[in-house]
Every structure is written in C-alpha cells, then in structure tokens.
Length: 413
Ligand SMILES: Cc1ncc(COP(=O)(O)O)c(C=O)c1O
Image (cartoon, rainbow, N blue to C red; front, side, top):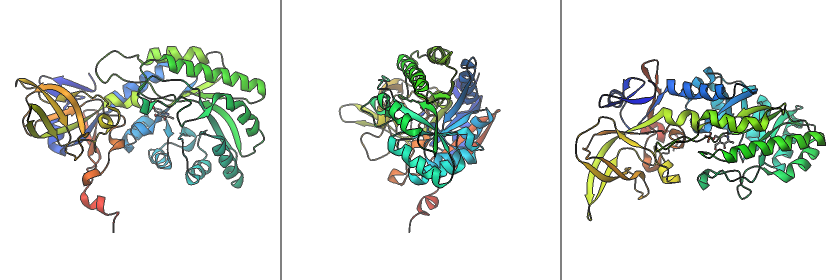
C-alpha cells in the first residue's frame, strides 16, 4: 500500500508512522508521499498514452523544490504562473522548452524573462499582451511561440472562486475574437501562434464542461487552419478534481475518455496542466491540539496549532478536508468545531465535526492538502512557515525546514 493508511490504530505515510515524524520535526508539519505522487502522475500519463501529449505539472499547486524535482524525474514538464515559478522550475532542473508560462497578469519583466529563456510557449491572455510579447521579442531579435488562452464561456460547475472559463471571468480571450487576433498576429514578426489554450476551472468533478472546452478548441483550430493560421497543439489546462469527502469522482480514465474524442484525428498534440489531481491526496498537514474549550451553550472548540496561515482553503473556499486522529482513540464521540489559533473567527479547519473527545497535544492529520496547501501559507500573526517532509523509499527527508523568526525579520529594517 502507498500513501496514507492505518497500520493498526496508527496513521502512516508509506509505512512511516506519522507520530514519529511529528515527534522528530514538530508541528504544524506538511508530510508528502513520493510514491503516491509518482503513481498519480503515471496514471494520467498512461490514460493519455494513445494520443501525442505532454504533461506540464501546474507548479502553482505545490512548488516546493523537491516536489517539482520529483515530478521532473517522472518525466513531467512544467506550467509556471509567475517569474518566481519559472525560477523554481529552472532550479528544479526543467529546461526552458519544458516550461509553459501561463497567468492572467504577466509583467514586462516576467515576459522578458520568458522570452529570453525561450520557454515552450507563453499562453497569451489578451490582445494587449500579444502586442507586448511581439515588441519585447522584436527588441531581442527573436520570435516567441505563443498559445492563445481562449475563454470558451463554459461553466466548470466548480466553486465560483476557482471557475475561470466564463465570459464574466478575467481569464482569456473570447472565442469569437480569436480569429481576428490571429489575423493580426500573422502580421507580427515577434510572435508565432502555435497553440490554443483553455483552463475552465479547478476541482472539476463533472467532466462535461472539460469535454465541451476541448471540442470548442478543436473546432476553433480547424476554423483557424481554414483561415491561414496553423495550430500545432491544444493546451487543455488542468482542473481534474479529487474526492475530499470520499464521495465518488471521475478518475483519469474517464477524464481521458472525455478529452481524447475531441482531439482524435485532429493532427494536433495536446498539453495537459494537472496540479491538484497529482498532489492533493499525497499530502497531509500534521497538527496538535492546543486547547479544548466548551463555550457557553455547549459548543465545543478544538483549537489546533495549525490554522489559516498553514491551510487557508477551508476559510477561502469553504473547502472540506477530512481531519483524522493520527492515533485512534476509544474516547466518547463529540461534535466540535476544529479551529486554528489565529485572531479571526473564520480561521477554521473543520466545521461541525464528530471526533473522539480530544486531549491537549493529541496529533491530527488534515487530509488531502498536497495541493494549494503549503503554497498558500502566510506569515499572518507573525507565524512561521511550517516545515515539510517527503517520504520516499521508506525514508523521510526534510524538504523545507521550518522558518525561524530571524529569517522572517531579516527582510525588515
Ligand atoms: C492555467 C492553469 N493551468 C493549470 C491549473 C491547475 O489546475 P488544477 O490544479 O485544478 O489541475 C491552473 C489552476 O487553476 C491554471 O490556472
């Protein structure tokens, strides 16, 4: 077995007891399973084997260097969403042709960085950005390959904060404007349009919108070819969801079976930019109970040593994460609010949960936090960035050490 499972009453990661890791490295602590990341990456790769494809792991989901390096070692390419993520990709060993640069607001400095490096494509978000890339490329006497990010006006039926494919969202270029833009692009010597891109949202568990977006891109590519613009690839973005609460969700085979019919026979290769699906279930956040308090009216609060600074998803998206005792207990079950230590009432990890009556110092694991967990951590309340551990081949290595207060303050006068 790989990943997080029980051995007797104890939760382990790839066989390594989580109690040992918390004792050795303290809490809050992120713990990742290398074996689970590898198996989830390979499953996507295998599901798309019938069609020419490249997986560009979305670094935004988790860009801790060792995780990025692990994915590179598995054969992944990278999707970077900022100059910082391009730097991480390079330091993790990706070469520029393995990097696509996405993002709704790229600064001139970031565009120049990507152009000078010669990344695989810059995924263009607006007519203005296309002109800026052209000018910057001509100044450098080079031609930059770009993909047009299309906004297909498709509702991904995910949480509104992570839906990106509707015309009311800030992302991409409206479908009906792309042909004119491509005509204009053919007159620009600093760019070459090689791809069409769409990413309609994240944590998508109803595949129909993803299938529709792929069909819309394939149709548009045909129309563009008739109009004189030859597209080489379709970048179908990321978005495949995971089950946070144990309810059934589509797997990678259904994902491939939804996307591939749209592109089969098109002569176009595809790029995929999965993030969450690869890493979310491969990480947990270990946290200890600081206090157990019953408020007037009988509401029980379990105050943990991790909160919105380590994991903001519950507060930001009302996201649900299972919260498991690392050692099972036979204490009577109670209803409780599992909250963080910060001075915000919305600082919560789990609302209205049932758990065995906890004691101070009990260790809990917040499950499925490998994606959009540590990358969104903050120093609010002067809290320090948590440590991160990767379990690989039966051994645990610290891949990010806990920040110190001196490091935090070293930026300040
Ligand atoms: C352009 C783009 N590609 C890929 C992703 C990764 O998405 P996910 O983690 O849902 O696979 C995102 C995240 O929202 C994105 O904005």
